[in-house]
Image (cartoon, rainbow, N blue to C red; front, top):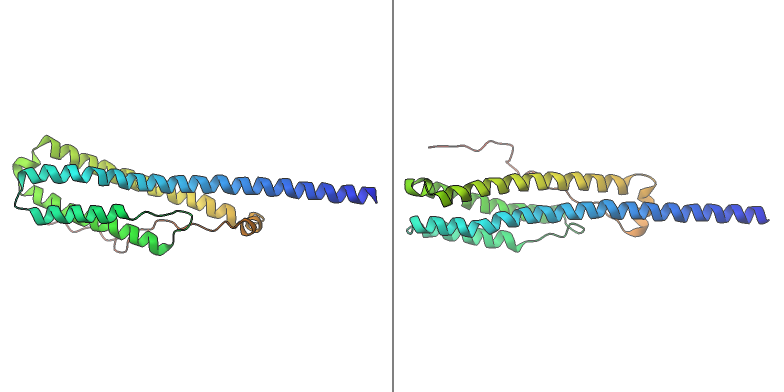
Length: 193
């Protein structure tokens, strides 16, 4: 009887230790994924922070292009008003987030086109620096999204694989959504001069 009780207690202790280890492992990969999501939002915010400087630089040269400048400012406000909670985000929320930033990209494209009409602006050192910083921001955003998707993949694999999926269900861990390319992104943009 004592041996049976000891075996049962040993098995229970192993299960508890195993459960704690699985739980802590899931917390670790979840934290990596949520940190990666915060990095994506930070990269987008960096770009948004550069836009007022770009708008002010263009304003100095192109006072009569007020509508384009207003559109950029409004698109920036809309894009920065949406935040996502990586633990509770849905595919629809990611699409809305991406659409707002896509709208901002479109208005920035129009702003750059306006700037092309002003040779003295194109040659302005501040404008060139801001364009370079925006390009760098785009690269950072792409890198942050790739890292986020990799972290989410690792997290989802961890909580969906057996036997972790048992503990994930018990402790309420849910799969996370990834960033995906916007529809139409597979087509190269048409450049016309």
